[in-house]
Length: 319
Image 1 (cartoon, helix red, strand yellow):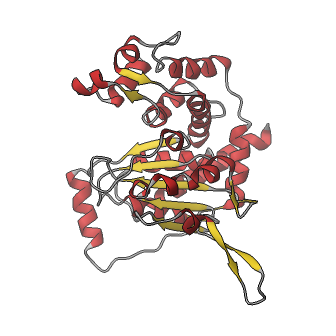
Image 2 (cartoon, one colour):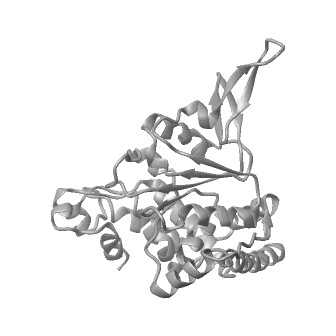
Image 3 (cartoon, one colour):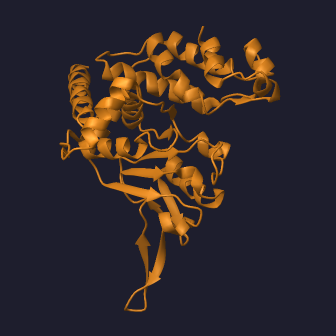
């Protein structure tokens, strides 16, 4: 127990240092950075949604600079094939087939504009995200640990986008929406990016430490009433099921599955640990709820007609 307390105190300090270092390159967006770091320490994946030009890619790149991990960026395009990201067998000079690893064989993957590629290539990520391994040329190969996919997505109303399948969306722990910066933030961004100032960031934490902190977070005790609260919250999103909220019955086609309950507890544990707490409480569950439920509940026609937002429904469920 003493060792756990010591590691959680260490993690809180590392987390503060990470945020300070990232802030040298990224102005504002504190909530988004928090959610990305929570997903990393929870061993989850994160989907960033926003219009072009909001520095989604820069944010992921900046975070990867502060982590001493192998980083790989994949630019998703309409002509990208599954073998382009997984790898392929090639015939070498000795007339032997050799597997040439693709960019997925890294620790931190930036899947840039993931919804600009067809579903066939999107689905190539599914096994990697869930099983932390890939199957190619009849052989299963484990991926390096830790392994995270941080994906950026353009709003699906834009041209040249393919909606992500529900099964793939469910693999992402968080769906985080980026908004435009405030006036003060935008002034600071313009001042920082139109001069000669170009700072590289320092590494704060390595892969071995991340794996160690993930293990400590997983072993954190959770009071039974917190687990019950998380499970009941997810049940509120399921129309036609016991425990469903009246607004779910009225406005949703279907709700979140058990993976949402698992992520609520995993995210609450991590948020608690990053705040220096030794067990999660209701506030920790509520902090991560919106980003976990946003992409797991699907509105019906009535909700669309009445311009009901998913976020407003989640706030109702949280009351």
